[in-house]
Length: 230
Image (cartoon, rainbow, N blue to C red; front, side):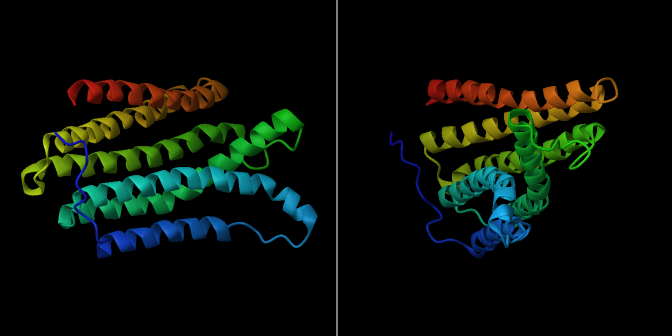
């Protein structure tokens, strides 16, 4: 049994090219949101925004890489894929701004703790608004992993048409399981913050963020599954 995944989408389709353009446009939107400095002092003041920009594009590149990987492996391009891909691109376009805001918030928050810089509360956001920021982030994260889970679920229904080998079928099932299980993390975070935000805003905000550390456990469990089944 070969452990190589056959490349069925060697030549990018119009759908992939359009998707790449949307990802590039998303990065452009992040760039033009930065003010052009006209002095070195402003460059220093812009450092936290540059760090937040770097933090934001990392998950954007991960999403793009996963998108590229799926289309190269399966080469699917029909109405079902078009529907889910459109949803993915829509989420990416609206998700980057809450993601960048959250990144900038965290950078400035930790900067205020470590270096005594200006606090983010009352300037960027009010304390009682942080839980809703986590809800916005959770909805975006949930939407992204859910769409990828649908991608792989659909690929499994096309196993005969794609002539997937046993290895390819199991790896496809692994990704479907992984992204499906990842959906539960933002769901749990959103449910927690909505349940406790009226009890303790600080606790609800902190724990809702800490819950994303469960991502490591999800990867570990699914890695054990794929090693057992391959």
